[in-house]
Length: 252
Ligand code: NAP
Image (cartoon, rainbow, N blue to C red; front, side, top):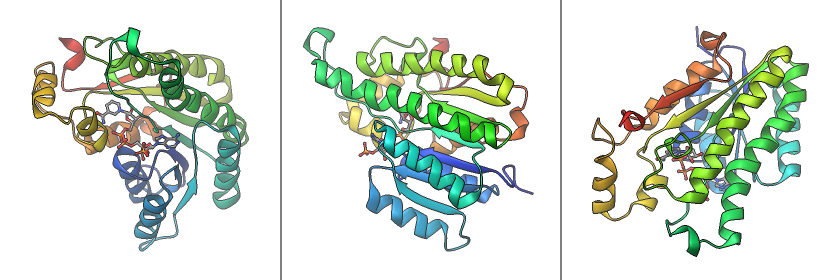
């Protein structure tokens, strides 16, 4: 028995890193998965790899900033697998850290468009499909940057994740009546390309880890475990919730 047997999921930013691991794990746990990204070559390669053992995964082009892409993604999921039970709003970007007064409006807007508008659009178009399916679970991947560990965070990124933190609760309270749950995950620094690109200088990474009591990066599988829990019926009484997976970072 898989923990997601019979469920149908849509994952954004699924071509690599955390999203790719979620797509693989969801299929292993019995779900059918549509995953989208802007990295089409990587996404198609991953779909072929997962489908060696099944026909339970499909890759689609999904730029989360574009409403038409979301409409297409939801329609494809329902056409392909009959319903939508789970949405993982995983896609995200981070940009170089500069003082607030040097940040341009264009850079600010780009980060909000991917990290915040993308979650709004995914949620907006998932709600009717989930209602038709009898309910669902939305999992929003935030960050400790949006939870209050703000000392060294890039301001546009932190603000975008803070917006999603509250939006996730609004979704939960307004759609409990539709049997739609919405919860957020707050990862600390996780061992993916994103963190290594943002902290390519080993000194910067070492300094970041001084603010993580466990003294190490989190592993992708440690986030995936939380995502599966929130996607599954194991978390059936949980909505508007916050799952912090950060090696103790926000407790300092
Ligand atoms: P990642 O390795 O950069 O993967 C994110 C994926 O999203 C990439 O494939 C990326 O493509 C894609 N993406 C970017 N813009 C997109 C768009 N407009 N539409 C669709 N897909 C888009 O990052 P990750 O570490 O797996 O992060 C996953 C989530 O966890 C993000 O929301 C991130 O903010 C959050 N998070 C990460 C960490 C960490 O330390 N890694 C910590 C806290 C929270 P490109 O590579 O072309 O950008």
